[in-house]
Every structure is written in C-alpha cells, then in structure tokens.
Amino acid sequence: MYRIRFHGRGGQGMKTASRLLGTALFKSGLEVQDAPKYGAERRGAPMLAFVRADRRPIHERGTVVSPDLVLVADETLFQVPVAGVMAGVKASTVLAIASQKPENVWRDRLKIDSPIYVLPQSEAADDEIPDVSALIAGAAARLTGLVSQEVLRQAVEEEIAPYGPKAVAFNLRAAGEGFGAMAAGEGSVGESLDQGADSYDKPDWIDLDLDLAATAAPNVYAAANSVLVRTGLWRTLRPVLDPENCGKCVWVCGSSCPDGVIGVDANGYPDIDYQHCKGCMICVVQCPRHAFAAIPEQDAAEAAQAAQMAQMEGTAS
Amino acid sequence: MTESQFKAARDLPSNHLLGSGTAMCAGCGGLGAVREVYDVLGENTIFINAAGCMTLLSVYPFTPFRGSWLYTAMASAPAGAQGVRDALDIRLAQGTLTKDEDLQVVVLTGDGSAGGMGLSATSAAIDRQLDFIYLCYDNEGYGNTGQQTSAATPHGARTATDPQAGGLPGRKKDLFAIWTANRPAYAATALAAEPLDLARKIETARDLTGPRLILTLAPCPTGWGFEPARSVEIGRLAVRTGIFPLKEYIDGRVVHNRIPHPRLPVEDYLKTQQRFAHLFEPRRDEKRIGEIQAAVDAYWQEVEENNA
Ligand SMILES: Cc1ncc(C[n+]2csc(CCOP(=O)(O)OP(=O)(O)O)c2C)c(N)n1
Ligand code: SF4
Ligand SMILES: [Mg+2]
Image (cartoon, rainbow over all chains, first blue to last red; front, side, top):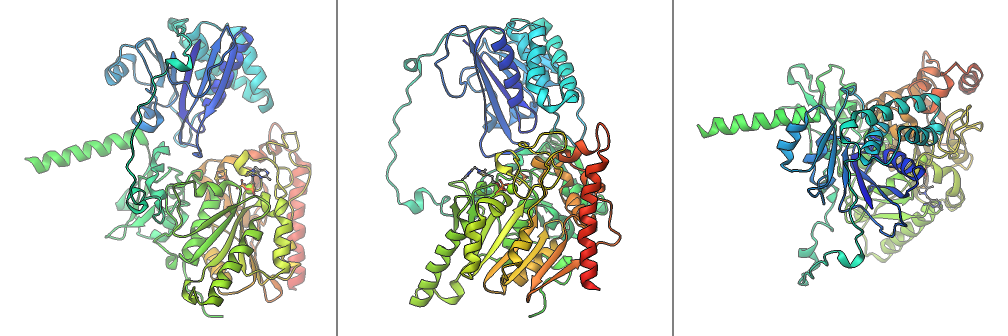
C-alpha cells in the first residue's frame, strides 16, 4: 500500500491536492482513499490531508501515521510542532518540499537520510496564501510513478471543472509544472506493507491518580482560557510597527482587530500579541499613517531571533 | 436616556473581555462584532449560541468567555434564552441571586438560523416579550458548512448551492423589517467596521428590557472570497454604497443614523468579492448589476420621502 501525506495551511489547497492525486490514482486502476484532516481551525492554520492507494481493497482507516511520501506546501510548518510534518517519517519516506531553499539546506536542517526533493516555488504575492494544490498533486503523481501525465490531466479537468475554465487552465498548467519538476524522482516512492491492527505498538497503560478537579483541571474552569490556544501559528505575515510613523491613536488599529490582540504598551504604542495574532493584516490596511509593515513570518521570526541573540550576547559581555 | 459613554472613537474599550485564541477565521467580521458587544455588555452576560461558526468559539475545554455559554440547535436559541431567563428570574425572586449578579441574556446566531430555522422560535419569544438581546452576525450564508445559500444571501451572489451563472436569483430576507413589524423594545443594524456606532447601539440595547435585535453585517473572507485584510474596508463600503443601511428602531420609529452622501455605486462593493466576480467577468452583467443598484436606489428614495 502507498501512504501519502500532504501538509499545508488552510487555504493552500492540500485538501484539493489529495483529491486530485486520489482521482488520478483511481483512474490509474488503484483502490484509493483520500481525505483531509483538520480541526476547527481555519484559513492559515496547519492542516493535513492524506491518500492511501493499493491494488487490493484497503481496510486501513484513520490518518496516515507511517507515510511513504510526505509533501509539504509550506516550509514554515517544520517549525510548528502541532503540524506534525515529520511524524512517522522513516528512512524510506520520500519528502517533497515546496521551497526556494535547495535540497542540501533541507538535508542539513532536518538531519535525515530520506530522499528529499525540492519543488521550486515562485515568490508568492505578499498578501496571499498561494493555492498550490495542483502543483503539489502533480509532483506527488510523478514521485509515485503510478500516474501518467495524461491521466493526471483528466483528473484535474474532472475535479476543477466546477470552478470554470480559467481555474481548469491554471491548474492544468500547475499540475504539469509539478509533474515535470519531479522527473528525477519518478517512481522513487515505494510501497510499505499492510499494517494489521495487531502490528501497532499497544500504548502502555498510564495510571492517573485522582486529583481534586480544582488542581487537576484548573485551566478548564478558568475564564477566557482560549488564550492557551496559540492562533499566532496561523500567521504567514506578521504586522510589525514602526514607532516612528505611529501617532498612538491606538483606538483605530485596536478596535479594527477582530481578535482583540492589539493592546497598548506603557508608552502608549499599540502592542500586538503575536502569540494570538492570526495575521489578517487589517491593522496594516487600516492604520492611517501606514505605521505597520507586513513582513513574511519566516523573515520576522528570524529577525526577532537574531535580535534576541544580540541582546543576550550584549548582556553576557 | 442617559448620555452615551462613547463620545468618540477614543472612548472605545482598549482592554478586551473576549479571550483571543478562538477558531474564527483571520479577518472574521462576525468575531469583530461579538468582541465589541462583549466589551460593552460586560462580564455579566450569558450567550445562547445557535449552531453556526460562532459555536466554535467555545470548544471544550477552551472558551473565550468569562462566564456561561449555552449551545443550542440552529432552530432553538430563543427557546434556550427563555429557559435561562426564567431560571434567572426564579433565582432573583427566591433571593438566591442579587440584582448585581443578574445576567444579560444574549442569543448569538448566524443569519441562516435567524432567517430560517430559528425564525419560529424568535417570533414566539417576541410574542412573549422575552427580555433578551438577539445578536445576529449576518455573513449572508451558511458559513460554517461552506457558504451555502441562506435566507440572507443577497441577490446575485454565488454560493456553494447557487453556483450557476447568475448567482442567487432570489433576494435577501429583511430580518430587521420582520422584527420591527412585531414592535420589539429595540432593533438596530450595525457592524464591526463602524465600531463607535456599534458601541452606542449596544449601549442603548443594554439599558432597555424586552426583545432587542442587533443585526450586524459580518464580512466573511472565507465565504465571500476576499483577502482578510480588506474585511473592515468592505464593511464600510457596504455602508457607503447604501447596501447596508445603518438604522435604529426605537420608540416605535425607524431612524437612519447614517445616510450615505454621496452614495457610492454598488459595484464599488460588489467588485471586492469573489462571490460577485461573475457579474464582471468574463463580461459585465449589466442586468444584474442594474437590478442590485435599482433595489438600493429604491430603498433610499423611500427613506428620503419618509423623511421629507
Ligand atoms: C438542523 C440543522 N441542520 C443543519 C445543521 C448543520 N449546520 C451547522 S452550522 C450551519 C450553518 C448555519 O448558518 P448560519 O446560521 O448563517 O451561521 P454561520 O455558519 O454562517 O455562522 C449548518 C447548516 C445543523 N447544525 N442543524
Ligand atoms: S466562515 Fe466567515 S463568519 Fe465563519 S468564522 Fe470564517 S470568516 Fe467568520
Ligand atoms: Mg451565516
């Protein structure tokens, strides 16, 4: 059986990618399951989708825990533990990452021997989560070596048809691009054996002592405990204030933020709670003085880290 | 009536009661309204939530609220509110709850519930003069399940269930008119993009008793198809094009508290959203754009005649 997992953010089209690949594999004569998996999270939130394909009936259910192929539409997800991109990845698992960084950078970062393919990605427009469903599906199809370009084309036409001819044309092009880019890895994904229910490691029993509810679950009874959920992980762009331009009219940006994550700091400047800011960029657009810049999350996180390091070195010496 | 606590935008609350970390989409116009309503009503508020996007606010074990929240089926939030109000009244009468501890009972509902399945229970609650606020966030569709057509979907909009060339052939149901025809204690339209207007209306509603409607237009990036950053701008365009009139029903009269002058053409609003894209591409659908403009023009003409 082939087990394939797609990782992306809500809005990037990974549900569609799994559907496109599933349909292509089905048309190629395999039994197929394809399904998305996400919680209540929305656009921008990490999500995954998966495909199982086999020449025999598939009895396995649930999420793919031991993948043969993992496709990653958004490279920032590697730093997000809840995204679980590397979960169950073994030495034979093929990885395909949409990224502008070359293969050796990823090998170095991930410290694994698995085959890694990089899917060159054009720079996304700043204000958009790019839909890369067909690109990723095309790459997956080539890596499995099970789907011809003609069948891939049929699958895209069939699945995208309801969205109109323009969408079909765009996705056909993208699927072809993904398929073409993975020529070197054609058929590199292998099958792994069926896992019967008895082959799973049984979890050990954990004995939980009975505690008073007040100490065992204080967070459950706390007011506004939703702050424990870090919706900042949804963000692909970060609003960053330039105090030079800010007029301290905090009620303007503050009351435009649907999530209420803009407070006021001791000096009267807006203070964004990045743990929870979802990156909608309303404040960036609404600020009359254009005091907020929208910085790609990756760059902003690296810059913040560097600043922190510099500060630590400063205090150490 | 006492003077408003909100004289200018700078008086708007800067510390927010509603916890962050909710599952609403980035840029959700509905969440913006709920957040502000909660700020103005305060902690002593209980929400009775009809199934919809906002039921994901409070998914066990997490809640953004500082007090109770009750989840009901789509059709029965006003019935739930009746039960809660009755229980509070009984405890007030028993003396086991003080006046200070009493709660403001708020139904939180989407437009799908409000204009469809929930209408019967709402009508009955108004008949009984239930003392509650009915807060509807109108994203003009069944948002939580993928933007299918609801009773509040506007003419010409494309939805998951009306994907055909012209979009929805029908027209938006007028929930405000249905409410005011039944002489409630208060009714108002508002939206998060006009926070000062919204705060004042909540304040007015808060200090009245009986059935009170707050109908907010909730720009929905996911269902309407626009970049989250434009959420507030699109809400304002709905007002400036006259598509979404800001008004209040109080003491038996409807007052328009913002008459857009000049009124922008409706296409300035329609063009911002994917759900109306078919009106402009591959070629302009003059007929439908004209129909939408004509309906807006007729509305405001009637307002002017009534005011004259
Ligand atoms: C009786 C019933 N039918 C269908 C559903 C499925 N459902 C859950 S939320 C929802 C959409 C509700 O639309 P609306 O009231 O406008 O709220 P929104 O999702 O837009 O926030 C539907 C159809 C349900 N919960 N109950
Ligand atoms: S679908 Fe629309 S209304 Fe629902 S949470 Fe998302 S933005 Fe808000
Ligand atoms: Mg709705």
